[in-house]
Image (cartoon, rainbow, N blue to C red; front, top):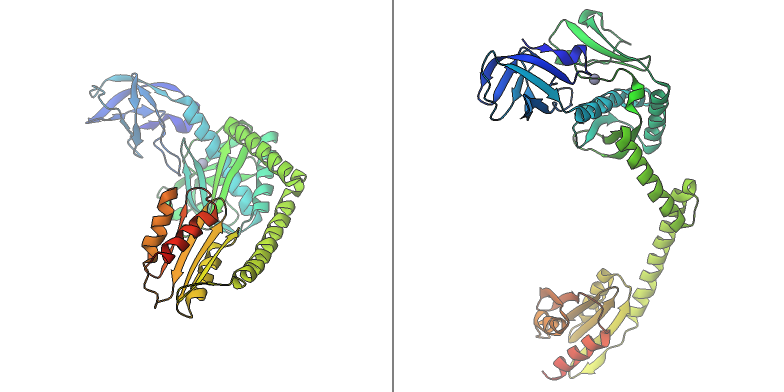
Length: 390
Ligand SMILES: [Zn+2]
């Protein structure tokens, strides 16, 4: 058994210990301040006699992965934690207890997964949540952090845990005595992890991402704590102010302003579609030998609509349609009736390739574009010339 120094004193950074077992690069100590990970939190990092500890594992007996250690049983070693990493994880872990607890008060929620690492802090939950609930919960968590709340640990007999007691999944715990961590009056949960002494030390908690986590759970909630949370909050706030300025609205009205813009855009797109259809339908063919040749260019029209119309134009037989759709690029469609024996793909590519573009399709229908804008008549005149010379 390894004495878990981190349980009694999670603020212990340095310690001395004796090696009790060696297995390759893995070293077991009689006592350790290295948290082996658990409860979704990753293991600690640091050094043993100056050599990097790259892994920590175990429950009763704790092993430390120290590549090239050169230690033997009985060696006295000095361990040192990477404190900035550990402290950040303690902040995140304590913050996670508060966040989950405060969210659970608002809605029935089930915890699916916790993942707390140096890079990312994530909660995956099942339950009915929305942005407003998340915002209110984050406000409440930060109120608790500002006021402060003492974090305490006690061992409670599993027989004495009933309704209204601490959050616990007894099926995951084998010991009779369960370690219960409480944060003032705000939360009480079974946990074997490392926590702060006081919620005040979290500094600040910020939800930085709230997205669907299906099928694993309903929601993935990514959060940040401490100075990292403050930096992100300032960045997000400035971006939100910049966006509000562009929308010509106050920050608190920017969502409504965005919705209004979106409605305007939808209406404009619908109008464009109606007028586009009218413009395409009014296109008259010229005679090219025995063929009807439709040729025209349209700015800002939906490409799908232009392709549909090209197909309609050649459906009656003995017809060719060359249509250009112009936006920030130039898009060309070439279609012919089945009785017109043309290879639309090769004609289209011979025209587009002069301008760095290309396309594909079938012998009677091809489409493609150029990387930039090309005057439509340049493409259409070339096609007309190729068809006349056949
Ligand atoms: Zn915990």
